[in-house]
Length: 561
Image (cartoon, rainbow, N blue to C red; front, side):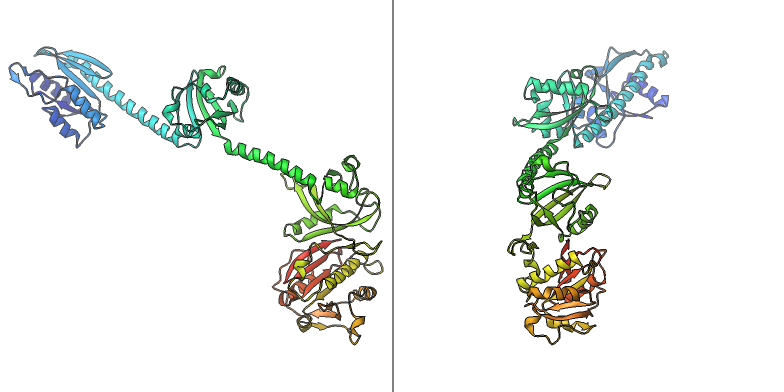
């Protein structure tokens, strides 16, 4: 049902029209005698169509009328109030003829008294229905356009439409990206957003030949902002004519300024990274899983006295690792230590060799380089020379200077005592006893509490001996200690270096200790007793020979020789 507001002058002619519309069954008609009253009606309800006079004469057939406003004044009122209802204006063409006009078209009907009005009214009905349907379609199209514009404006992507190299429409994100208001870009030529014609032509060529994963043309370029600065963008287009982009189309603009900044920063970072690698005062080596060297930094070349061509592509065994010697290279062992390196305490200490045959101790931290599937493809090795050169000629030992301070701080353990015990541990790890691996434990410092929380399980070999024969810093005692290391239980050594007991069983409950997988009963017991005393614990593992340093119930250093 079409609702009609009819402004009726109460003449017989308009009464016949109103009566016909009401009887047709398609219309619901409300009539008022003046436009002023029509305005009041429109305040409380809406209509599909309004039929009103364009300009009513002052009298018709001797009847006088008071004209409060004409039809065009009425249209202005509707517009000011935001009322979108379509209006049909009528004007008289004599006593029995009306001219009907709508914004999109006009018609004229002739009515004579007594004749059949169906044919005469057909034009009016057609005009009313056509007007109503057209206005409805216009409203729907306008609503769709407004919704689409709102969606496009809310999009984080810049979007614009171009025809013949001229901006027809731009959304807010695109204009804001370049520092403009939308109206400042509409009507401009796109060439004005490029720094020079050559860059514009390059972008057009890219749009003609480059396609993304779904086949859309795209180009990466720099558009000039309002402030004159270049802004990195990615253009994608759905062209009106695929053969010629300049004919126009719909463009999607992605802001890649942040991506470009990251890429530029990454390039700069890579350059600094390469410079750091080359000039670092640490030995830095990369190798594949077969041990072939792929990178050797400047410091490593200088330290081992090689030229790049002497080592790149060569196997690490036979260069810095001797073919036959006390240390055998084991890549799987290095990979296993990576998990400990993530916790900050894993060190792989190897005896390496320089080109001239000099032996050196290097502390390596190893990092796995993995592919997208998580498989190790290379190993990055960062090494520091920890050779103790304060010893006599031919005596090559491991220096603890770079890492022992956090271990012995706030304890009663002297530096020389810790060094002496640690070097005994390295000899046990490397040599074992009579060719067999040996595992043992040393507890240094806070002796009274350690003895309280442990018990003797064998006769104490040092009981009753004078102090000068029990001092661990005496090199003559080393062989005795290494021989006794085969016995069960722990060594207890005072902070000033005296061996108090051998064969002590730790009685502290270790159920609350949490250590990495692979740690055995000996490690758990030492972690437990160092958590309740101020002692330092050192464990030499019988399987693998690893040396683990404990303090406060935690692993401070794990060393694989």
